[in-house]
Image (tube, rainbow, N blue to C red; front, side):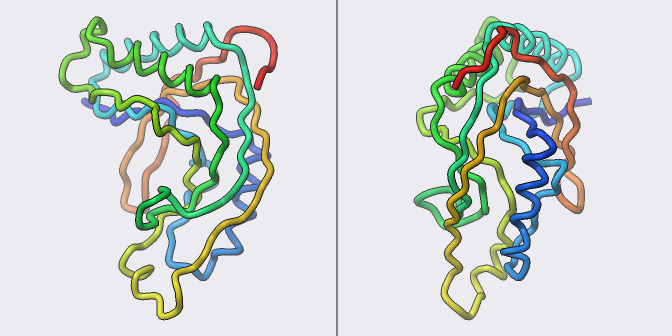
Length: 197
């Protein structure tokens, strides 16, 4: 059986609660909100892999995690995304972070390298040149959004949120009728001691 997997950062419960509370402001818009327990930041999308490949990926992720310090991410606004395109999402946008970029590059290198012998079933990595940390809060229902009689809603809310990052997770995305459900397959703690930004 193949699983649809990705590498992500899960959020602390208090952060999830704060983000869930923001939803009231957009309750009347044609959007599908991300369930509170599903809020996460995707670092690397991998794709469909077989169980034996998934075990190998989990081992590689543990190795990368041990080599990295815990750090923190700062999120500064809630807005429509992606930038420069017709809006598809309401998301929490983070500030660019060199530690996160390095972590992403290292994970892509070990997961997508030719030496990993994972074969063609794993998608090629896309690099992080345009990587902007973001957390999807809601998905826009396109047909209803386009038919709004008034002007397109403007969503640009300043927020200041510092999120401590102490682990990375290998997660499975199960596509269900009511939206994706996410299962943590492996949680790998960042290994070096000390908090850095």
